Image (cartoon, rainbow, N blue to C red; front, side, top):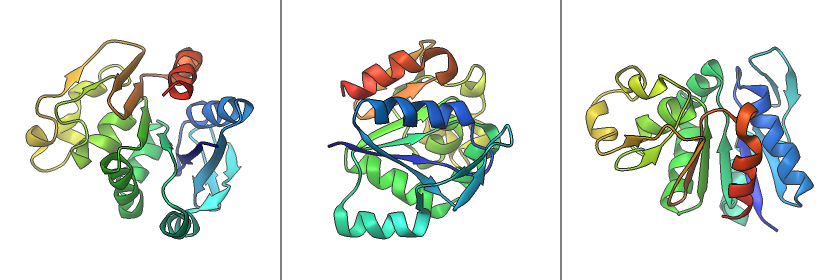
Length: 181
């Protein structure tokens, strides 16, 4: 059975996190939310996560990485994930191990670009976020995103990366592509 982690940080976009959890669980995928024990989303909906970050990372050491990670949007949630060294290291390891990395809405720019994951990649994101690399990618941002191409498409797949610009409108297409990966 495939295993998928959904990373939650304070301020995450609820529908972008919980709709994939619901749909993938219905499809028989083992999906678990990872974050602090109680996480409040951008609409003040509180979620009790399935796994705490430290426990999850220890589990990855003993049981191996999950097959995929989903990084929902939400401006504050993505900023909080980008500021979390443990989350950044986990996402980088998933990408380096050729595991599926799925980023929604603002997450490609705010979470993935500082890691250099967008370099030479096609991607989509929330409209206008593609112009915000200098704000979010950090030092040497031009190098981190060189060769990347923003596509004005609903869902973009580039090797082991899947991007969706806003799951509330397109989650069926996103979930179908994830299930067929």
